[in-house]
Length: 386
Image 1: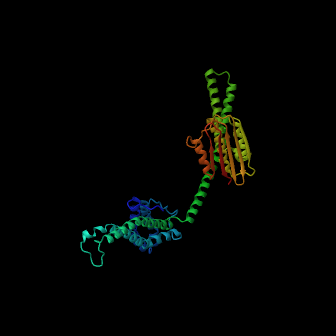
Image 2: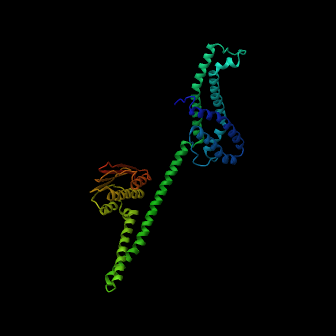
Image 3: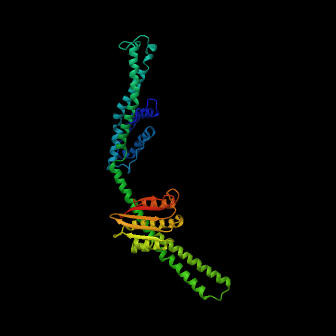
């Protein structure tokens, strides 16, 4: 523990924390004890009482005591911990405040003992003769020692108070573990729901808008081929509409495949990634060895990563070839995307790689990027299979 100097701001903050802790604790205890006779009132008042103490710790110690993950009730230990802290804190704050203020006061009295002969020329009964230089020097030396120890004592008392407050006013380890488990389950549910929604949108687009665009393009194509006797402006309008319909159909198919390709559900990652590699503008060497399939959510994340990485390579890497490897190692799915391009890719320079990293982190995976200037670039991803 770093010892603060007597004149440092840290020493004064620790001292102020300990000394103000006594009146604050007495006021909160006097409010807590009567409320203990009224359980409902106590349950509603405790968060406000605890907020006062949290504010004190934040103001003097710069420490944030996290709030309880759930509201206190008679069936939660947090209510009894908070009640016990507010009711018994004066028993701890009183000796701490007296001890710290006494050491500071005694140190100041000793240090200023040379003023004794000036303020009281004649020694009082049972008091040392401060006109004696040896006695005065001893008192001053003791004062210096006490003033040196006072910041350390204040720091220790403040640290003890903070430790007790963290244990009783903050959530326990068990409550934090339960909260983390709940949040993990909630996040998994949100991810699964989002993936299911993407599959639904893909299915609706494939069975609805895409089919209507196919029909429209076919009708325009037949009109373009059969209506040869129309005036040239009309023929050009049909030709242009036909080309626009085909382009819209192509863009919709690309969007649907990027959203969640149907082949991923039906045949798995190998078939879905084979389609992505075949459509890439550069040669892509693909190797998929996974055996047992991962969960649908993980497969969707893996497909998105490879598809987006190959898109980024085609747009920015100036590469002549790329390699994609997907394999399963027990309960982990390992992905590697390599290209021989110009390199220099970073997480900070573009949103594409940040999006990949966020997608990986959403399922508790890890992403490692190696892209020195001049290349090559390697993306390694590790995903849980479930």
